[in-house]
Image (cartoon, rainbow, N blue to C red; front, top):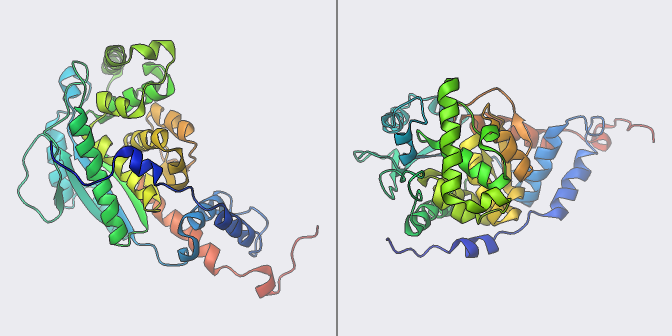
Length: 362
């Protein structure tokens, strides 16, 4: 086990402040004075108010955007739960480094700095300035047979996220997107969702990377067996401890994203969760510290059935709905220009008074 000077999860959670109700009210009041019918910008107004409640007097500063892509393998792939072999995780990280993936294209287009983090890929990488080497171990364990991580490994993976959030603060990054790469991680996310929300594996488990009906049924059976192995109380509608859920049925990249989201909230930086996997991490963070909710945005709603359940669990409304299920942070980065547009409207539109426009009759 590596020693760490980072705070414990409880210490990190206790340091997270709720977003400012005072600044939320300021934003709502200004929105109502802009030259438009009341509420006519719809969800953009909610996005604006939330951003102002986080950034407060700095809300008019240009956004410094970054996307963090966490990569790790999953031992559960040995049970045949994915349409792709586990080597694809390694291959896709190399694709990220070669700037050939969808997330590379979108990050470049929307001027978001991209950072790729190896938390647990089952392969060795040559030194590369574009890859952050933070490997805890090569792949999580097979959660059907044993817990996915030891307590020490979970702590180390969480600390990877804490460290990166602290660095994001030092680098003055003011809007973060979180994504992932890991063959088998929809199985982990489905197990997390079922355990946290007391929902049947059948309802939370989707096709992942493209399973056929027979393979999907097998995946659902595996998840049901995983839950029976680790959470006897699940059958009695008792919610297990969120960190224990993460340790037993999560993954190294999901743990690192959980730490990253907790850390970002601690440093008052808004975070856009991408799809099902990163939202599973957000749900764990929310279960640990509900005040995290004020710093979270949902980039989109994916095609994975468990994603909608997790969004409802946290209380997030997706910015986009594009029938996507790619991961990598793609949906989160696509939401960035929507957030930027909302903030630009808020700060640059005229008010009724400044434009000399008559307001609506009472």
